[in-house]
Length: 143
Image (cartoon, rainbow, N blue to C red; front, side, top):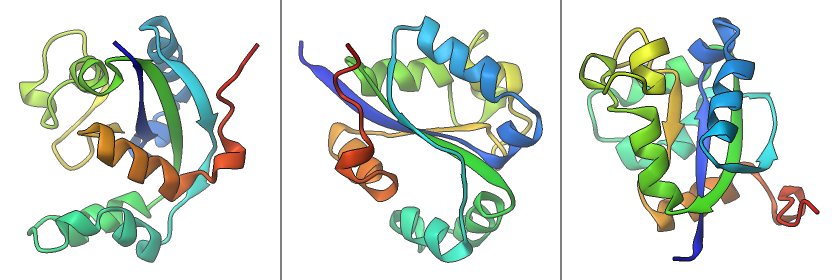
């Protein structure tokens, strides 16, 4: 199976709780390579563009408000079967439904503030990664 890439975002609640190091350590221990990483603060417009696919959903405005409420840490990760493995690793969107030992089960407080984002498909992983990182910021060869 070929290597896949996924985008993750350590959300503002993760940053506020000072969990960047712990969550990043767990990501690496799970076998994901970090190809790009930065800390940023999204504006409502940038958050709205990223989550445009949810524009018609009732939670869209609340999501954009939350994602622009503080710093976040987007990362591009790489691993075989990265999309499915990462979604299993982080757990269900609602932490009350997340399996024990997952990032969301351990650290998230609610459906709206669920610590971390993970791409849901290879195609979206590519689109989402490009939203945050131009190709020159992605370090594919770490040797």
